[in-house]
Length: 203
Image (cartoon, rainbow, N blue to C red; front, side, top):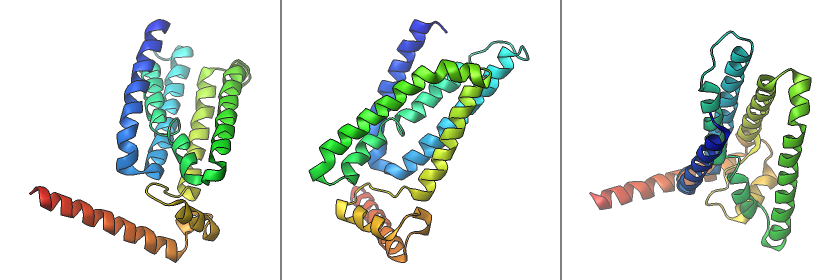
């Protein structure tokens, strides 16, 4: 695909997924979207790496599958890893340090992204090709899925005091205390009840 056309397509996709994120965040919460995003990133960039390897080595004719997978990679990244962290910083930090913490996190994130762009040519040469770099990114995304599943709590519709109380009593999310389980189940039941009442009202 022409580089200029690729830039336009990627920009449009990011705009659309950015708008969808506003809806998805309030509908599904942070944790499920994070897991779907990181899992999708791992799958799509791994597939892109596979086809890139096969095409580069002459085992397959050139096609658009690698570019399509990268496009899908950017799409799922846009409604997860590229957006949720900035939302969660406002939910995780007390208001007294929130501005400083968000500024620091944005600075670190941009420094990491800049570093990745700069080291890509070295990784390409060291690992033996673009496909290997894509597989490296896929591995990092897969590891992120495991980390999120184990440690990241849901913060949507939670007060800061609730989040702080959770971290006082828990580290691993799937092994959270009985009190946390009861609170979450109660919250889910209330949401379900609210949805049911709204549906009945419409009928």
